[in-house]
Length: 331
Image 1 (spheres, rainbow, N blue to C red):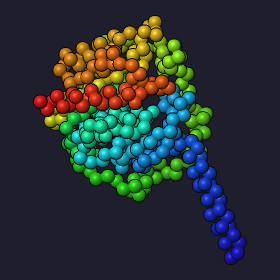
Image 2: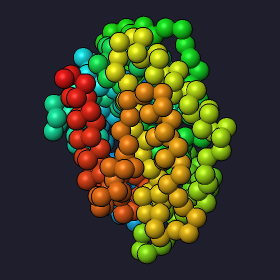
Image 3: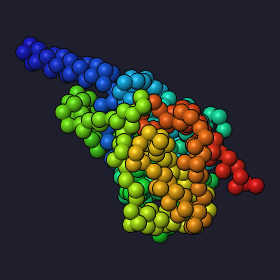
Image 4: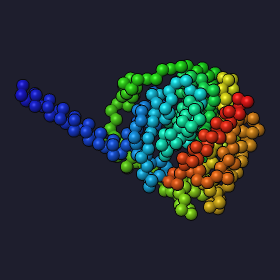
């Protein structure tokens, strides 16, 4: 009996040591405590509220920022769960994980402009854009406006497979206990140490290009979109626009130029042809559009110094552009 009790005590002690070690690793390397959440939470983050995390984006490892990162109970980086007015869908520029929550586009719309807004950045590639619409319609009430925000370099992968009809269904948020249970069923135990080791040995490290004391992701590797790329974008954006029009939802597109395009004067082979072509397609098809490239031309410091994403000032300015566009639709 004593041996059994001793073994039991050693088992619990060992379990406690493992859990304590994993907890300490998760604090030290908080970036590697983010499961895929493929089943329920279609974002790259936990559905935990007000989590303080140290974030390194594309290039900002040097900045070592500590930010307030908030996800709602549906797994989106948002404060709002229900009764939304605006939904922002798209790539990493919708979430801007290099910024504190209140400084993101969504945070500005909520805090400064009193617009109840969520951001939806799915794990799926942009060639699964129809899954964004499915996730939105399944998890939120019908918004008045949907905004697509993606960066110029992702245009090539934008494909939208049209669905027959969008049905919005109001769904209450999952409780933290239930969401954690679903996450466990889908993923099992999450070991931050394993994630860190995987990151350490398998990550493809980004080597930034530094020009005139500015840091870039792709530098001079940017190429002009082919006719096929642009046709693919046109087909997708028309399909998406028609879906929301048929659902009586305003649809606005905002394509954000690459940081390199914004600073094209420091590169030999970077032009604004992509942004001009995209704007032409949107205007030709009468799709509500904010020409962010033109709007940025007279502005400074729109991009994060240590990242390819927007700066606080850039995100605030973009949110103002969308508010003005939305308000103009009411007149």
